[in-house]
Image (cartoon, rainbow over all chains, first blue to last red; front, top):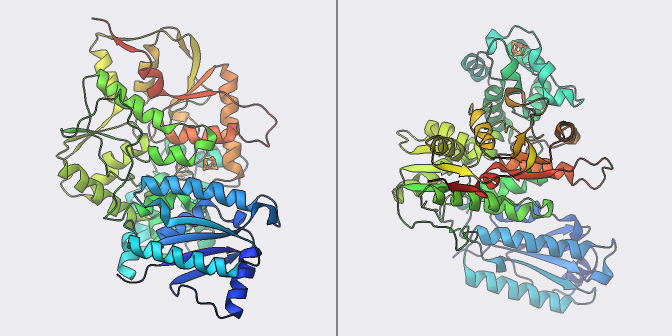
Length: 141
Length: 386
Ligand code: SF4
Ligand code: SF4
């Protein structure tokens, strides 16, 4: 199989700091991972997560701050409730719920982040392609 | 914009017969909700001022497609159909526009259903008391009900109750319907969003699903699914040979045969005619007949009802905005004015949109009322009278 399409949606604060540190120290991250940086994971709604799958993602990971570190208040909690809801929808669509995960980091945890991202990439690779890709997305790959 | 195609759309839908009387604009719920919106002006621009693309585009995407204008039009212009075809044309030329409510989440899952290898888990709602068959010639189509149930849980709209009660009613009539594991969305919202290609894919996949299960008749409870499977799908599938039956029609026919009655329900109720049921499918009588069979239930019509019923504020999850909210609140005020204790709907979308307006936390005015689907009211008390 072609490498799976992985998407990380990354909060600008602690998780982005981890990614930055990973970049500075040349820590390898899965090459098939695309990263979208957002100001807060609370900005991401269910539609945007679903859209990632609609556009052909095989796995989506939300990189969040811990609750107590959120710059805006409820960000990670909002992220969590969106993940729960989208997972129920994915389940109805017959898409493995493990294709959507969230992970929380403190700003100094670059090594743990790299490890989590590799583990995520490995799990999705083992699952294979997302069976529910709309037709036009299959033709594009 | 493709002028030749526009001319054809105009011809096919009698737009050249427009008298410029303005009755459509005067009846338009968007207009009455305070928006400067004029189907008459759209007709004029489409006929003679096609270079005003900005106006045409915004009007085409903003329409509620509720068909109230057509009801009023002395020339029989089918504005909704013009809008439907113009949306497909604009979407093909300029991409899908139109602000999609809920950021397009619903359209996303509907589009994901065009995947041929989809293996859904959609039948978790089937409770042990429901009698369903693995094989047979009649199927019940539950559409997006399992999805809405998850997505709109926060509005306390329980669309799966409608599905369960529909099966209960069918069981009462000794029908054990097949429930298809992989039926897909009927495509209503995609078609009305201008996404013809994916709509057609859904039609083909659904048709294959029906055929491979040997289904000869599909029973639907949702008026949107009814218009799609009954009217639009046959336009896409040549030789479409499946009978599509509206549950309400079936019930009306069966109750008329006699031998069945409803347990009393002491309440006053009012009925929201869904646009896809009334104006698009011509079904006004069946719901009223069936409600009339329930002893104790007094039906009080709203100021605008039947053919003149006002929209629930949004259709196809396109362009839900402040005016939609306004329309919904006006509608709920009409409900209160009847003094009814119960608002009966017959389309899950009406229930979703009106509940959404009721539960608006920022509104001080109390417009909340008990809301239930007709199917549930009928299923709770139907019995044999011997
Ligand atoms: S109601 Fe009919 S005839 Fe009158 S302006 Fe509207 S489209 Fe034209
Ligand atoms: S009325 Fe509410 S539920 Fe309906 S489209 Fe608008 S926001 Fe969504």
